[in-house]
Length: 208
Image (cartoon, rainbow, N blue to C red; front, side, top):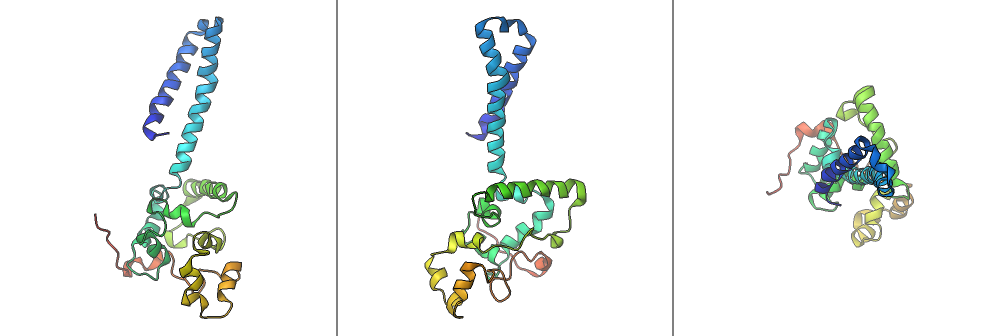
């Protein structure tokens, strides 16, 4: 459902419910009871469901993730002009959708991965407004980054399977696929969101 439809729909829901509340006598008739049922149950449930779905979709966008000010520096790392930085290389070359870049790489690709990501997002709100947000360089992942979050795109890709870097050491590729060797370990793709070094970086400026 388009976003522009939400406000009129929710407003109409409220007006119908208000009408039934102020003119309770209309519910004496069969038609009035049907109107009350729609106004006080069907429309509110629909409004909540539509709004929830819309906001859940919005929560997957890069803009939403970076709207939290402590994540601003992490957003800047996407523009580092250095191909050794994995998030920057993926973002700048459209290897992940730019408007869903954060969610693409930070969601566990399991049955409940999306639910888990949303639940962790609620904890972020708790930290932000109750415990106090940490400095950007002090932000850590809840758990070590899992290779599955890379492999859901790269597994089976020719460049990944046949690339010299993944085959220069016997058994390395099998270790990566099994999770015994982390994709972001030292000697592999170790440069991720290095917010501490931003002041020393040059940045890519996309053409308008």
